[in-house]
Length: 292
Ligand SMILES: NC(=O)c1ccc[n+]([C@@H]2O[C@H](COP(=O)([O-])OP(=O)(O)OC[C@H]3O[C@@H](n4cnc5c(N)ncnc54)[C@H](OP(=O)(O)O)[C@@H]3O)[C@@H](O)[C@H]2O)c1
Image (cartoon, rainbow, N blue to C red; front, side, top):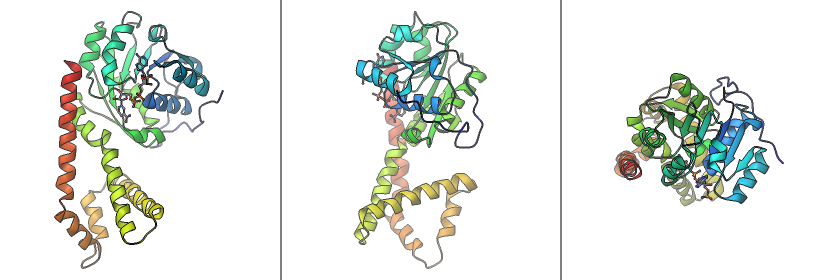
């Protein structure tokens, strides 16, 4: 058995994390995001191994999770949620309703439910549970896998300020968090949840530019990815408007202004704006289909 990687008690912004006031956590759906959640919560010592029960539909997967993290791992969701004061749902959106119907009779009335399922509203979860449960919905992104994520958090109608703090502590162990109103979740899906895919395309394209100019592909990709990482960090670190930081790079009659002209002619800004808007529209369509 391998224990979870040890980390310090701080999230990436330096905030001190404390052990969560949770007696039993049931993590339902230990897939990619579920495992990342488990790993970061244990690594940040937000909860001890003995307080966690994880489930997966696939018995070998459950065995793997139990073996790797030392938590109790089952395929029985009802058994997992019995006595749990925190339930985290990380199954696929189309599986949420079925799981809620399965667990609702065994779920303690005072438990907090945190769902990471995209496009599944707090109202749907509350409606399926129908016992005044406190529900929080979150939208993480894949950089959470390396503690560089961006997670938006919103609360349902019964969730409290303390519940939000618990969700913030959990997702701060995976990167940054913001608390938002649920009406913003589709826009957030189109921006920060889908966003890594847009950024990978940008990284790839910049690297192709380097390749076109004769740079080896590996070097080109490293230059490109670190440039995005560094530029992003500068925006967050300084709090400056990106346009101001862009102006600092752009000397009169220099090279950068020529590059920027190409980007403007190619419609980069409009294309990215439209990508976010279109993905958010699709998120809204999925909300309608998952919640009808
Ligand atoms: N990946 C992302 O970037 C991302 C970002 C934001 C939000 N999310 C949300 O996170 C959730 C999980 O996504 P994921 O990428 O981690 O998917 P995933 O890897 O497919 O994980 C879902 C896991 O749940 C298991 N499962 C299915 N039915 C179950 C049941 N009845 N009881 C217990 N476990 C069950 C699946 O097992 P089987 O494989 O055996 O079916 C699978 O291991 C989704 O709702 C998604 O919308 C994901």
